[in-house]
Amino acid sequence: MKTDSDILFHLEEKPPIAQSVTAAVQHVLASFVGIITPTLVIGSTLGLQEEIPYLLSMALIVSGISTFIQVKGIGPVGSRLIAVQGTSFAFLGSLITVGFTVKNRGGSNEEIIAMLNGICFFGAFIEIVLSQFIHKLRRIITPLVTGIVIVTIGVSLIKVGMTDIAGGYGADNFGAPSFLAIGFFVLLIIIALNASSNNWLRLSSILIGMLVGSATGYYFGIFEFQGIASTSTFVIPIPFKYGFAFDWQLFLPIAFIYLLTAIETSGDLTANSLFCGLPIKGKSYIERIRNGVLADGVNSLIASVFCTFPNTTFGQNNAVIRLTGIASRYVGFFVAAIILLLGFIPFIGNVLQQIPKPVLGGATLVMFATVAVAGVNILANIEFDRKKSLIIATSLGLGLGCMMVPNVLAKTPSIIQILFSSPVAIAGITAIVMQLIFSDEKTETEILSNDIAVNSEK
Image (tube, rainbow, N blue to C red):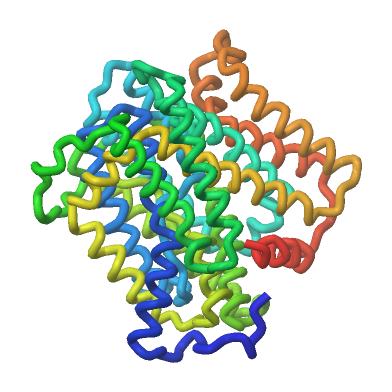
């Protein structure tokens, strides 16, 4: 845990330009892959190859804008912490399910993106409203529920990573030895770099692994660049470029995840406050968290307008604050500027689109499994009893069981199939209902102490 004496520059202090830029680059390295990966996975899984460069540019541009809002603070919107915003992994599985539903109805790529943007647009209002009651929600969405949901998110996404290692959905040569070799080569690189004592190598391990894996694949002729020369020099954001659509049945699982991400963001901002040497109780703390979660919702609203996916506060950069000792929020302005600049250069999005599926799978497998481990870490900080064990077992059993046997609901009404198409929704709803049934009195202080213990390990 970062103590006040370890902080070189406090929240409102301005480090020299050189130190600010150096710290900002580390924040970008820690967050960059996380920002682009959900878009790459959703786009490639749903066959949106032609749209991926633009979607990636929008993901980066919105991340830059959102980070600025979170750091600067505009009225009651923004935590005014050095909190990096980026595309959320929590929605990934559910958005893919929605996309395939539209695709199976005969929808075009534009119609798929229009539906995703419309659902996420209205979902953002849920988080905006919930932000004003975040201190009360913590009594319902406890660490027990949060841990179960995060484990389910991670485990359900592992299948996506393994599929990409084998070549990706619909690959002609699915499971080819060359694909598997590249995918596991990337995995080994990431593991090796994470074992290094060099902080720069650890922070950029996934990025380096993807670069080396891609270069290796191109060198041996397994993959090749396509369409790079035709890339435009500058991208112009267009609101609702692909249209706007909505289906309330498809909306329900997404709405539930907005509830959970509000709680997750409050935990990340608590950890951020802790590493910045700020109080984590009292009126100022509650206001900071409320404003941060409100910014989360507003930024997700902006994301849907500009054709990208829900944003959330990243936990990765909390480690950078701990490592550098620079807690100044002015570094966040440099972070926002760098990410924004990367987004306005479409060449970057086009190059990122060329990342081979096995390379992407080798990197995301680690990231997705890490999400599951974070959930396990949360559960490990809970004092188990018979009731809690039963809640965990039932929630994970139903959620992961329906994921493993997707046809189990095939004979039920369509509304049931859609609502429970997401293992995350099943596990989360089960955990909440069972917790209410087996309700024990638990104070806000106890809940908060669990959150701090969990997030201080991130």
